[in-house]
Structures are given as structure tokens and as C-alpha cells.
Image (cartoon, rainbow, N blue to C red; front, side, top):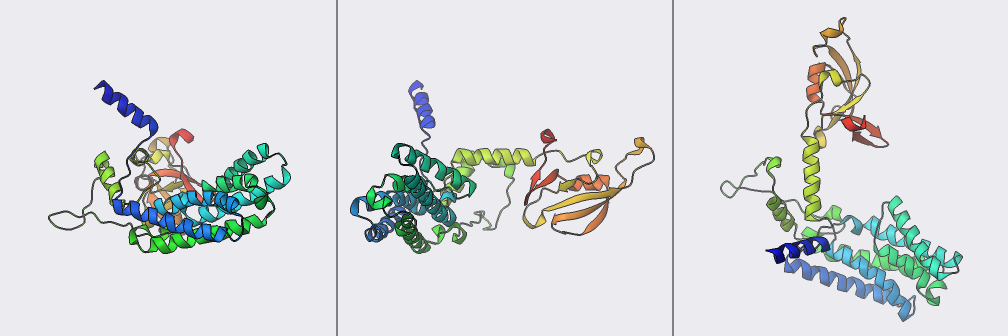
Length: 329
């Protein structure tokens, strides 16, 4: 018992989780990586000597892991792949040119590259290796200057991207980019073969395990992360409705729905009772639909009716609507 407890603690500490993918999927990933790197080695040999070619291929080898083992991951998508490598290459070449001491140029290049990838939403871990190669790749790399960005980095990026698109296209469930993938599944009952609606509050750990196994492709999010996300979402969604006396003229409210049913309304005016004690909730208010279904339309409801419709107050932040929690007011 004690040994089992210690073993579980060690496994949890190491973050070990078995991959629930088939042997076929593992073989496909390995073959894809083989063809991708084979093409990159071939193209790199035209622009760099053998040692430098191997250095740049090292970063592309890391990209191959993402594109062929995790083709639907966010870090694997074309924007992350292309921009991540090119930005990192530009940063690396710049640091190599303007910072004479390699001991400082190398970490500065990687640090700046990571920061820029964050701000440009193109984080691609192999980009760090590209930035590093531009600094420590030797004379055959530094002599290229900014040409290094185009040959071999851009050429190699195009090559591995093309292999990823063509190779993964052969397998419907893992087509790349993720927008081309077809992972939609329908849960049916064994007796009626008809789709079944489930009470999401009853979803269990085993349900998540089953759902992950149905993808048969590696997802770059852990099972525990998914469970945590689900728990946070359900707790956030299951809340008491806004009371009619909590409504505020001029403020924005959402119905908390999804997809085409979602809407945001603004209270633009309402009737005030003569006696403050007469706030029964039956007072009428005028609202305007600002976003979602019924956009630009107006309507009249009682405060009670509007409070039943409204699930939470929202505010606009740049291009997105965000919920305002009671704790943030």
C-alpha cells in the first residue's frame, strides 16, 4: 500500500500520462516525421555545409514532432509554424550581427524570440532553436546574414508545411491544418441508434477518458486540464439569475447562450415608480440588442422579464465581450 502510494506520487510529480492513441496513429506520426525531415535535409544541403545543415534541421526536427504527432495542437498550426520560425530567425541573425559576445547574444536571441512569439500569438517552441542556431551555427550561418531567414529557414518551413498538409490529408481524422480536420462524432444509444442528449452535470472522469480515446490523435492538453476547465465552466454557468433590482440603466447584459442563440442587450431607458417602495419588478424598460441574435433591434420588457433573460452583466473589451463577476464590480 505504501509502495503504491509513493509510486503514484512519483508518477504525478513527473506528469506521466499514457497516450491513448492507437498503434496505427503512432506509426503514421513516425512516418510523417521521417518524410518531413528527409525533404528538409535535402533542401538544406543546397544552402549550408553539412554541419550547419544539421543544426538548422534540429529545429525543424522539433517542428516535425508537433506537425505529425500533434497536428491539431495550437502550437502546430501554420501561423505558429511560419511566423514562429521566421521571427526567431530574424531575431537570431540580428543578435549575431550586433552583439559580438556569443555568450550574451545566444540567450538574448532566444529570450527576445519567445517574447515576440507571445505578442504575435505564434508560439512555436522550435523557433527558439532557430534563433539559437542563427547565433551559434558557425561561420557558414553568420556569413549568410539575413539571407538565413529565407534560405534555408523559409525554404525548410515551406517544405515541412507542404509535407504536413499532403501527408496528413491522407488520413481524414488528422488533416492539417486543424481547420481541415474532421473530428466530429455523434454519440448514439445502442438500442435506438439515435442521438442522445446528456445532462452535462453528470459527466464523469471516465467520460473524459472515453472522449479522449475517440480522437485517436495526441492533444496538447492533459486530461486533468480538461477536467479543471469543465469544472470551472460548469461552476461559472450554474449561478443564480440577476435580480430585477440589480439591473442598471445603460449597462449591458448577456443571455449566456451559445452560438447563434447568444445575444447582448443594453438597457437604454426605463420607467421609475413614484414610490421607491413600489419596485415590484413589473416596471417597464426599453432595451436595445447590441450583439448576437436580433442585433440592432429594440424591445420592451418588465424588469422581471429582463432579469429572467439576463444571465450576467458584460462589458466590451476591444473586440470581445467579457462577463463582469460580482467580485470585479
